Structure formats: C-alpha cells, structure tokens
Image 1 (cartoon, rainbow, N blue to C red):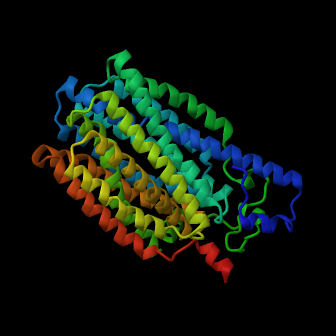
Image 2: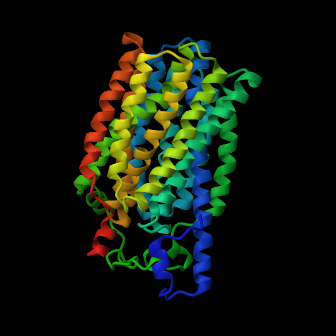
Image 3: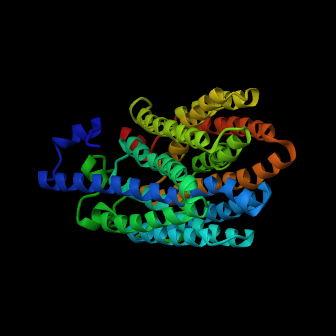
Length: 440
C-alpha cells in the first residue's frame, strides 16, 4: 500500500506541503482504501448469495430456471439504469453517507428475501436490493479518483476491485457452512444481512468524501500533476452538464458496449456456475471450491492487470483488456469439449483469471477518458450497459438452457467475448486525458 510511483518520487522533493500534511494525506488514503474494500466486499456478500441459494430454491419451491432467470434479470436492469443515476449523485454529494446507507438498506432487503417464497416477492425485494446496491461502485469510484492520482490508480483500483472476489469467495465459504448446518437456503440471506449491517456502520465511521473535505490539498496537487483544469473551487457542474460531459466522449461509449458483452460472459459463470456444475454431477462442496477457485484466479488476474496497465503500458488499459477477452475463448471451448472435473476446474480458474482484468480496466478506462468531476457518472454508464449484459445473461441463459442445453450458452459466450475484444482493441493506444495533457 505504501509503494510510491515514479511520479510521486519525482514530485516529493519539490512538494510545497509539510511532512505533517503528507503524513495525514497518506493516513487518509490508506483508511479510504481499506474501508471501500471492506465495504464493497460486503455489498457482494448480499448480492452473490443468490447464486448459491438457487439450487435450494429450485428444489424447495419447484420453480423453473426461466422463473429464477426473471428474478435475476429484472433487478439488474434497474441496477444498470440506477448505477448511472447514482454516478451523477455521487459526483455532486458526500459518498460517505450514500455508500453506508445503501449497504444498510441492501441488508434489510436480504432479510425480506429470506422470508419470501413467491416469484413476485423475490422480484420486488431483489429489485430493491439492487437499487440500493447501485450506490456501491459510484461511491467507490469517486473516492478512488479523489484520493489516488492517474499514475497510480490502476494499481490502487485493482486492490479495491479485489473486493469483488473477496465478497464472492466469502459468500462461497459461507454457503459451505450454512447449507450443511442450517439446512435451509434462507439463511444464505439472513446471515449476510447481519454482516452487511455491521459493515455499513464501519464504513460510515471510516470514510470521508474528498481530501478537500478535510482541508487537505487535492490529489493532483499532492502528486505534482495539477493542470489547472479541474480546480475544486469552480462551481459544481449541474446534473445535465455532468451527463453531457460524460456521454459526449465516444471512447466511453466504446468501452461501455464492450462491457455489455463482457458482463454477459462473466456473470453467466458467476450466476449460473453453481447450477451448471451441480448438473454435471459435481457435489455442492466441490462446486463451492470450484467457484472459490474462479474468484481466487480473478483476484490474481485483476490485481496483476491493474499493475501491468500502470507499469508496463503506462496508463493504457486497452491492450490487456483486449488480450484477455480473446484468451477467454480457450477455456470456454474446453468446457464444450470435455466433461472432466479436472478440466472443468482448470477452465473455471482460467475464466476467473482472464475476465477480472477487463472488468476492472474498463471501469478505469471510462474515468481515464473524462474529467475527474464526472468520473462516477462515466463509470456508472459502463455499469449500465454491463448490467444490461447481466440481465441478458439471467433470463437469456435460463431460456437457452431450458430449450437448447448448456452448450448453446458456451457458444454465446464465445461470440460475445470476441465482440468485446474487437471493441476494446479500438482503445489500444488511449490513456488518461490528464496524462496526455501533462505529456504535452
């Protein structure tokens, strides 16, 4: 966490700020980073738990996969829309309150899910859960962009992004404990809800909105790369101006559409993975370990991708993203060709490894291409299209499996992976706008 970039080292000797100021700034950066990792990990704990509840719900309540697919798809459509909206709200307001309250209300909706038994009730409460979930990423993005400079954000963002995998692995381990000892799938909603309530209290205590809110200098001034174009003393942009600024950039659109295809690929494995593996004759315990393997690989792939995009590609996110989406074709093709459990384990590891990098880097790229003042909105828009892909994955995968079997799903994944790679290749040479200006 304490590693310094070359830019930081160069600017340290000529920094006009006192050692006490620098020490305080480092303290709050560290506090912000670990708080959003814990906070967003818990957001995932009360979202990914549904995947592990699906087999029990199918068995206990006798619904079809298409029914369950509706419970998945309708909420994520709302999530995608609200993610962009909450991006604009985050850009203008204090995310300390937004993030902690959103997590608390998400926990409450999980309690209601555990008490429900009908598809309409599941759709209502899971939709509300996703509405409150939609504050998590925009809040985290704003904090990252305000506390970490463009020359280091790939690495720091990748550390935050590990919260996706931490949350999912925690959910998998929780499922291994809950299902054998508590019997009912309902506890997969109750127990994460309690943990999320505790986490919401923690992040409310730990987070602060921006360095300026603590009377500290902006991150650009501390890093010595201030351009004068993003003076925090200027009037805040209106919501219309924020949206116009974010969406007028064609590269934001390119990575957002690429994210649609990426999310179809990745969330098909994350949401339907446990069901697919168990239908291949793999036990619940072995299935859980394979899903943990996928997330562990994602943890490595995500952090590695962020680091390489900073250090090797000097702030360019396109090269790694493109190569990873092309590489996804290989493990998916192997799953089509083999029913071996060992091959399946290798493939799940590879899927997790190559999809986490693009998922991370697309979000960073969208904020790279725009102003810091609209970073959460630009990132939120990538999420809007990404979760449209997830919605298609939910009910679309359910329909494909019910009518054509699992092989049809893998062919769809191969097609969408290549489509995503083609779009991401268009950003191969693009980097953060502020770095391009500084270089000039």
